[in-house]
Amino acid sequence: MMTRRDVLKKTALSAAVLAVAALPRSLRAQAGAAPSGPFKLPPLPYAFDALEPHIDARTMEIHHDRHHQAYVTNLNKALAGHPALAKETIEHLVRHLDDVPEGIRPAVRNQGGGHYNHSLFWQMMKKDSSGQPSGALARAIDKHFHNLAGFKEEFSAAAMKVFGSGWAWLVLDDKDLKITTTPNQDSPLMHGQHPLLGIDVWEHAYYLKYQNKRADYVAAFFNVINWDFVGERYEKSRA
Ligand code: MN3
Image (cartoon, rainbow, N blue to C red):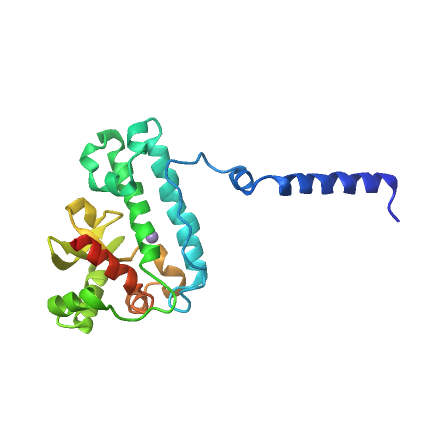
């Protein structure tokens, strides 16, 4: 049987729960969060488990919610006190590192590069990939790499030869398709190239499921490529 005191306690508790629930969602989300802005973590455009079994849900969750969030948080910290830079797009900052003061340039390069690369990376993958490019991109891949198998072979070899942490890319470089690699969180944008497709080969991208077997992760990646997105980037970059 509840005493009057129990009832009061229970009522007070329920009232507190209701008060929090009544807060607008935006305020609830901010409670206890790090100082926000100017850059924000973009939501993952699909569920954590959408790319299973090729990329596991736990890896996606940690990679997006913790690693990508850390790049955003640290970029925002670096830009505190630089209101003009804070108004630029992430693409502009990464492309024009020379305009960034030397004191914060390494942070913008690493954290800003990380934010830019990962923002692209999530969109470069999808559930139920078509498995192959179409249209103008398909024709360009056939021209430059003989066929899709030739492209996969060259892209995989590049991904495998990255020593330590970095990325392998398909880029548009002055109207030419090329495969390149970048160390750490450097972006092809820093070399005047347009990234079309990239694979993150930092161990955090695959270690939980694949451990040291990077080749298996790279092979699995071809099953989740969002070729529509890559094809659109190709046509926009060429225009
Ligand atoms: Mn990563």
